[in-house]
Image 1 (cartoon, rainbow, N blue to C red):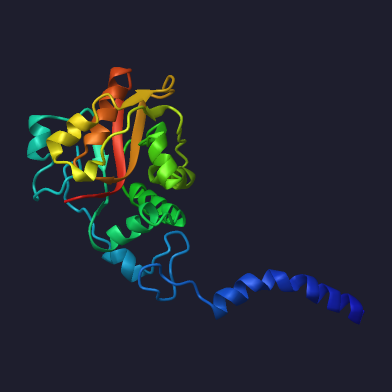
Image 2: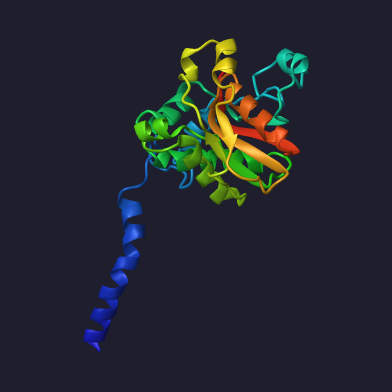
Length: 244
């Protein structure tokens, strides 16, 4: 009888290890290193609350605007091809740190963190549910340099969280372009002309273009024009953050 109990106890020990490890070594926040982070986002409640919110933004391009407005002056003058944009945070402070860990340092677990953050914000919004998520594509030479596409990794985490399917094979970047961050706005628009193509029929009428950060929106403007030319009825843009 004692042998059976000993064997049973031995077999049960591994099941206790996760609880013991969590108790002895509590997970810490990826920003402040304080214990007690959220399992999905990796952030403690304080750091999550301190992320720079994009609270009042143009509903079309998500650039911050003054209270009482729904569209920025540029979107009123020259409406982009996409229909709406959601970028819940500003590319400032701690959000720069999180995105830098993914894009510049190649720490891909941060894609799951950012995807979960975006999924939680989307769940709070009464937005039309799209049929398909399309990550902004990268050229094969850029993929070779970095080893992965940050937009694809964030989209994968988001798709897993909210159940909207994603496709990475339908949009293709066919021309290497200069890095957008080094160019003024008008040159960014010219830089991306005819840089993308469709690789097959889009099996949806309402799609989302997913990116990590929106700056001028030149990339998503060009992609949305391409999609609308091929019969897509509604194109939304989702991103983690927007530059002010």
